[in-house]
Length: 295
Image (cartoon, rainbow, N blue to C red; front, side, top):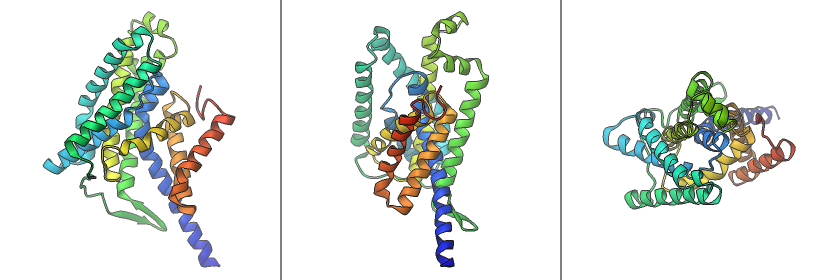
């Protein structure tokens, strides 16, 4: 009986740690959508496609030059930022300026999702691709806890990205303007800032986070072009669960979803994990529609 209790406790602790590490990764995947959807009110369902694009760039550089995937993603941040700023400008000129961003704007991002996916299929095919790094494979064992480095390193990188963004949004003029742009554009103009420029910067930042998230994804698992679809539901669920427009809420929502999925997969089987996780989301919406830290 004592052995069974000890085994159950070990399993419980490891499931909790695995959920926290998974939640850290979910933070990186979701934080860009939290900016575009939660702050800018732009339903960018193509975001996971840009994450997969980041994964493939990390794969190419790793395979040809042997560069670490996370280092590659940091180098690619300016390019992804410019890509995001350009996409927002097209979106604004074509839809937002004309007041047609609701349905036609959503169709625009659907198109981006499928165009990006098809381009990746044409170039790379549907075979799974992976990267090599010293921390992919080894684990640290601390007492009864196993810490796979392929999950621990992405979790630390994701939380570092969150901390940098939170500091930027809280302590810089542009960051505070991004936080204010969805609330009071008139006040923003009185402060001498153009709402369109601020939105362009914010959307560029949201797409830039996809470069890092893509590198973290291919560290955790091999990828192929359609893998991003698995995360569309999760990222919007985490945004709503944590509270729209709240980056700390995004982290909390990601951690909760990761822990719930880990516990469910450990004790009931992996197939139940998505259903239980989204069940918790529905309960949260029923009792607190604004989310955990929503305004």
